[in-house]
Length: 324
Ligand SMILES: NC(=O)c1ccc[n+]([C@@H]2O[C@H](COP(=O)([O-])OP(=O)(O)OC[C@H]3O[C@@H](n4cnc5c(N)ncnc54)[C@H](OP(=O)(O)O)[C@@H]3O)[C@@H](O)[C@H]2O)c1
Image (cartoon, rainbow, N blue to C red; front, side, top):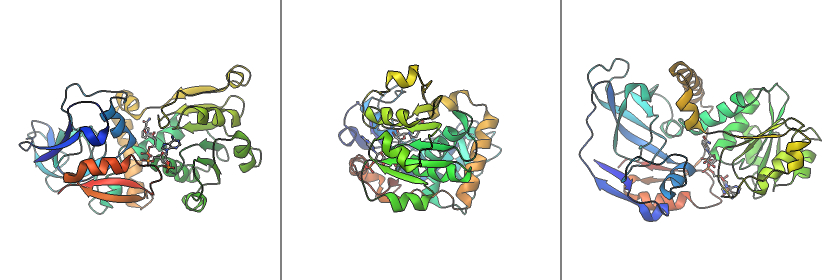
């Protein structure tokens, strides 16, 4: 089978290449997925750059945190999945024609779901859901602010917030996205990192939670717009800048700055919590309630081109890899 690997850290499009290796065989309790579609996320780019929160134990390594495939082999002792079942892997290493994992690390999916949306299920929908449920108590009617709001996570935050009766004020860095984000369920859209514009957009209501994927001055703008005692959660490194928050907001207004990392959640969640999270997300997937736009699809053989495309600003959606 072919799989994408990188054997040094560096610019993703330069370090990624395709190799041929024997098909991996599932051992006891393991399943093999024949991959159909895989997404390219900012975390994959950070991993290849050596800037992600966890490094592969050895190189070469295969990136890819999200994908979907069909079970084509099972090891002894596998009880839940069978050949022909659709599933999404939890472990990293999806950019390959086939992937082996413990049965418990494969999210079972109903056969009728949209394959491309299924390939984008594991990380971003889970992140959006956990940030709206696990960072602080929220009540219907509360405002949530976020930046990078037209990202895949951002659009999911908008839709999930609307489902929960929360209101969202959404910062983007370029104009022309308002109609699109309002169609996702956004209550307000703001261009640029300006706390006064955020408050004007909410009619003066101060958000209690802010989700920051950018860092730098973008963090400061969200923090300054929050209600006293509000929480800013940093969950992305998009600008590469340290999060800046005015000391007065921390000292005099009780603003809290904290982080969120899905991998850290996986490390501490018990299996029942993981199953419950994905049961809810798979239900949304089945109902067509996950609708991350896709800008382009590339066969795995063109992985370097695909990765270069994923790193471009101003995309209208995700870049997917397809096996074949
Ligand atoms: N902590 C976690 O567990 C976790 C889990 C999942 C995702 N994430 C993070 O969530 C963020 C979004 O991921 P995604 O997959 O949803 O992204 P995506 O769909 O690939 O979209 C990237 C978005 O980032 C925006 N962007 C890029 N650089 C920016 C900058 N310097 N300033 C402002 N906006 C910028 C882009 O805006 P334009 O459209 O204008 O180019 C676009 O909206 C990433 O930082 C990712 O690492 C974190």
